[in-house]
Amino acid sequence: MVIMAQMTFNSQKNMATSFQNHMGISKTPVIVQIIPELGPGGAEQGCLDVAAGLVQAGSRSIVISNGGARVHELIRAGSLHINLPVHSKNPFTMWQNIGRIRKVIKEHDVDIVHVRSRAPAWSAMRACIGTNARFMTTVHAPYNISSKIKRFYNSAITKGEYVIAISNYVANYLIENYDIDQRNIRLVYNGVALEKFHPLNVKPAQIIAVTKEWRLPDGASIIMLPARITRWKGHHVLIDAMAKLKRDDLFCVLIGSDQGRKEYREELELKIEELNLGGQIRIIDHCSDMPAAYMLSTIVVSASTDPEGFGRVPIEAQAMGRPIIATDHGGAQETIVRNETGWLIPPNDSDALCTAIKEALSLNANQKSILATNAMANISYNFTKDKMVDESLNVYAELLQRKFALHPPLREAAE
Image 1 (cartoon, rainbow, N blue to C red):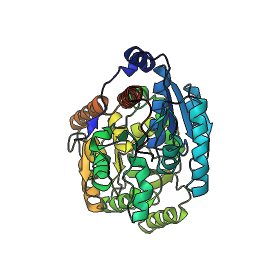
Image 2 (image 1 turned 135 degrees about the vertical axis):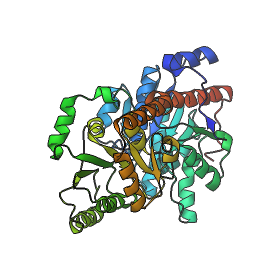
Image 3 (image 1 turned 90 degrees about the horizontal axis):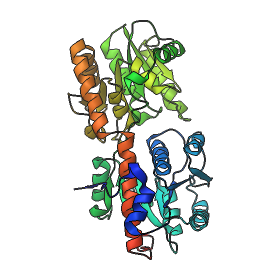
Image 4 (image 1 turned 90 degrees about the vertical axis):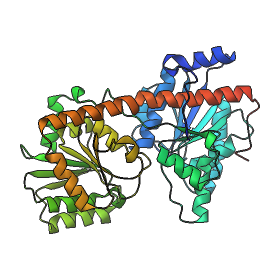
């Protein structure tokens, strides 16, 4: 059984003070997180949330990345950002990053280096050798294992003294595919910010603004799929389901950037045209107000054809009390209560998706209210940002306790 993050210290009070009192150490903990870039995505959101939690807990937070559109959020929360090319998979750059990261460790007297991606894991693991910093990782996805070389490349992210898995699905993937001690895995689910994703916190003016921006017809039922435009996210499955529904009163919004995948986007646009759905399906590159978008939606769909390590769309939709239809694999199996907070359907099955949409549309007002209540309760109890941050900080506290109890630092993993 995967070990849940232990409540070693009460991080909501003050991790630094609690640790100092417990161990008799006067030093304020310094935690470095490393992530390729600070853009959109679940891993990036988790990094930002944990950084803010560290600052609130009285610890020093440092994030190393190649920059990105969300650096200002990090700085506003009180964390230090250091720009290094840790996004690069170039072997020479990765080798140079060893020295760059080691310099940061020594200059800032870093206690823990926490890596959230494979390429920087190779550099950081070696950078910790000969320093007092401990090395840990988070695995955000079940990485593809198509060859021995790929397996070896992936393996760096599994070498942390503690390895956080964001779902049981990811934890089982690690146990089945890598030489990892199960006792070193910590299960920490991603979480949603309820102060942002809650129906009562969305004003009517926000919904009106999104409606105008998207030019939606009055009174239409809205089916929304928020995901970057890439094939495995299953946009084509939803388009096929829309064709099978044969409902003129339905409107579908696909929210996400193609990130340069123009061929797949063009394929989707051609399919929409061929099925005569141009008046009902719209592709939106970006939405700056996702809570309002969820409130505007009648049904939210996550149609991924490949299993996701966790998936933020199902928990955000449930937090907003929206009916969610997701594919029956990966992290969605752990975040959706089958037939109580949403629907789980076979992947790549437009017939099943069509049927589930019909069922969701047929709910009466009382049934919708019950589903919304169950969904919101599920999220508030199991998948909040505060719970995720608290459990992450407790993994840090556990490793800090181990560091000072076992000083000098353990080097076997890096070697």
